[in-house]
Length: 151
Image 1 (cartoon, rainbow, N blue to C red):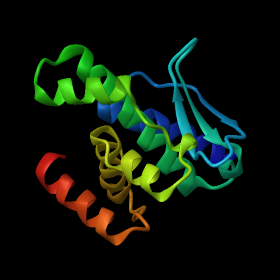
Image 2: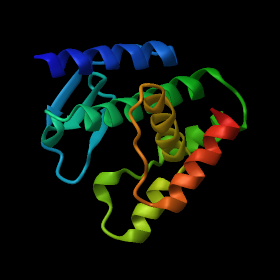
Image 3: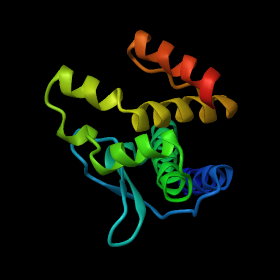
């Protein structure tokens, strides 16, 4: 029960920080995917059930998916180059569940919406003393540079 309360509190805190609505959190078997943002029929964040008892992995998933919620709000209300880029990528997003090769994974993580979500996750969780570095040191360097410039 304690883990569930920590997860719900984090969900509320991240949503509040980003100025978006708090979404229900559910667990389900997602194969190779860590998590996903479900928009229809009802918005929710779904986390791979293999992480149900792992607060750090849940925190990564929650923070990452809430950043996508923020991106959706941003493109709805802003009219600038970033909004146009994010809108295009959100409409044609590659998700991690359909990746079969290293090249397809690289194409996924190099999307501006994914770089932003990974960078925000690193930034936000670091403030909570949860350090989550990407396993690829070159991509981690890109994340840290992105944070310095944009977050």
